Image (cartoon, rainbow, N blue to C red; front, side):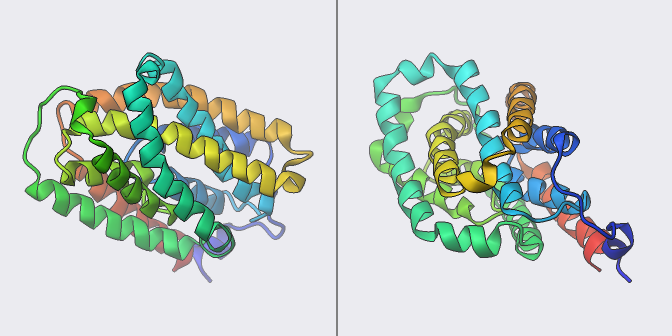
Length: 268
């Protein structure tokens, strides 16, 4: 008998307020790190033994917007820059088109699929380590003029890879931008800002498509949303301080360790 079977209750609990707080904290901490907040929400839900309902899937998508809105609070002045806003629109376009195209497949087959998540965590971790191995130290200050409209579009394509749970939206955009020659600090902040229109669109789509599953659970959704927002504000500041001194290799090793440990404990 597997550890998951031993730990799982006879009747799986449905998402309640306490679970919403835990998942909100997980989301807020992991959203802007290159370790995939979606993967952590899926694995945390699995570890908590939660029943995989349509509401749980919607919850895992929508509370990400709570974390993302912390960017608006911290970077609201940057959103007043028309040139930056136009580049964000260009970058979010390919993500939106690809996301709409594969929405049903992602929601039906990949979101909640622990096997897919563990593989993407593992492969993504290896990719991050290799990337940092050949990446030269970059101490340039934030300068959004580095990001041309062409680069913004390509960054959007990189972000679109993150429709696969476990890939990590921030990792995809940061690595993609770095490969395009954008300084690390610039692409990190652009990635933060790009998350805002991306998750507004994703959450709006989820509210429209699954309003029947959300009705009656608005209070629980609100708890997760607020908790993720507050936690993310603290996480962003810590992450920016971290990247000034260190690279992303530690996140790569963490992804690999998480995938292996979770498999051994819950799936073997």
